[in-house]
Image (cartoon, rainbow, N blue to C red; front, side):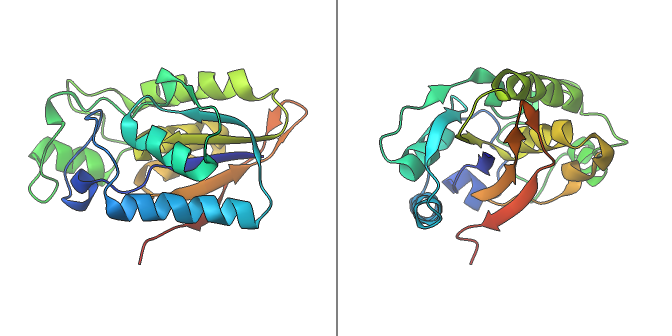
Length: 194
């Protein structure tokens, strides 16, 4: 099975700031979330043969807390969307073009200076193609938009529905990985949301 997880909470998540590629660590709640996920995997008897992470610290830290010392492979294709000039924006008072984009990801292109969603799907898709022949359980620790890109890649029939779906910190999706074919992902659990 392939398990894709969004990193635990950071202070920027908590403050409703467009975090993007800013490299902030997990806050205390994020640490608790990641540990809870790790315990859940242990309770399920799930052991990882491979662990991949975005290069950003919050994703690496999440993978470390879940796997407890497992070797983690950093892959730049798992990094969060590049928000360009909008990174660090207060999401309580966003620029009008960001409001328009977030209101309908499918029909409104990313504002100038931001990475297009097609680019996120393409790079996460190439990554998934590279790992689909691996056997055993695989953990992928990434970010909300990068995760949505991977889910869109794995579910072409979604017609963009993942873009508008809320994916909370430490949400986990699972997809089968049998005979080099990755199945349709399903949400497993969302941890530490209370």
